[in-house]
Amino acid sequence: MFTSCFLILHKKETMEIFTIDAGTFLCDGGGIFGGVPKLLWERQIKADHRNLIPLAMRCLLVVSGERKILIETGAGDKLNKKFVENNGISNPHRLLESLEENGFSPSEITDVLHTHLHWDHCGGGTTFDEKKQAVLTFPNATYHCARSQWENAMNPTPRENDAFFEEDLLPVQKSGKLNLIDSNCELIPGLELRIFNGHTPGMIVPIISYQGRKIAYVTDLTPLTANIPLKWISAYDLYPVTAMEEKLSFLREAHENKYILFFEHDTQTCCASLRWDEKKGPLVERKGDLQSFIG
Image (cartoon, rainbow, N blue to C red; front, side, top):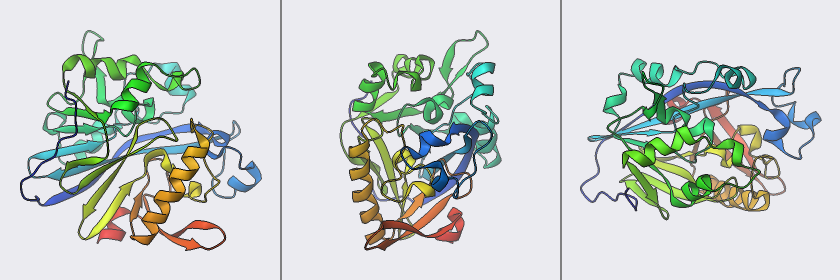
């Protein structure tokens, strides 16, 4: 097991980035919007008859030199039929299909970065072999997450316990390919990792420097564009006041530095930029796909 974030000191390589689709699932709308009344949030996204709304599992592949770094792996293909049906998971095999469509195989991936270890973010990092044993989906990759998140997943609170599955985690640990990150750092030049603690202890927000812009993969800091208003935080945030404070600080930084926000869970919007209202705080300025922002 590695114990720190890699810091590469040689000259910066040319970087490419690819949006990777890991499918969709359904989630309780009230869970995503917490204390915000349904009368308000349903103006942004419609719920079905069970009060469920669709969420994307949108991953990102960063290619720099010899490194091919996959950020997130979605829910994966190990979940049982009942779980898949109850959570409306669209295509358990979509992650590998999307990688193949973009010209990559699992064996080519050198790094897997999980922002945190909830099942919808890391389940695709392992798969079942012919003996129904969970093994690494990406056999040549080093798997990265924050040490505090790993420790939290190994000993979760009762409130968070159902979000972690052993078969997503223990094969990575047993493989010896787990790298635990202790603090904010660069994984490679141009890929900064920031640690946040409101949604779950040790959640990482990757920030990619690309073509003179910064792209922030905002994971569950702001799951949807509809979550950008300050008080529109998720009921799934373990520490909601901390989550709100972290969101305010980061979105102010993002606005001031013209970051592109890349959304993992928003089915309608991949990326957005911000404007700032003196009374309301952060608001969406523009939406679009990644290509529309970076040309």
